[in-house]
Length: 139
Image 1 (cartoon, rainbow, N blue to C red):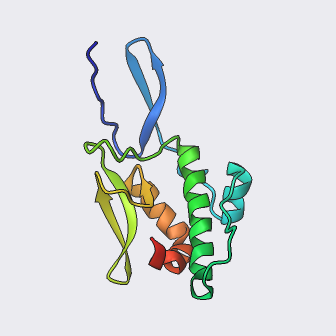
Image 2: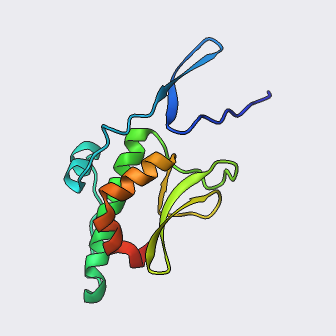
């Protein structure tokens, strides 16, 4: 059986498949949660610390747990998760570089904060910049 891969335009997602037609719609970025509490309420799960971390890392670890909860809520709502084995798919990432927060693209290296489009990545960065800065040493 032959297969074909179709790369969707950025900020578009599959709405439905009708016969041999794929119907696209713009990705909904407006309905994404804007706070950690909204992420927990919408996603229904959150990541917590179950041990006592070193005091100097406690704030960064708590921020990372909150970030992961928010990232997972966004991924869940978008119906997306990065496939790091697929090097033909670009992932739009947020990661520290030289003490700063860097926006990048990546195909193969696993990055904690990866998103399907530039717009979603930039919106996540804008929405959760404080948590990202606080967790920067662990990203």
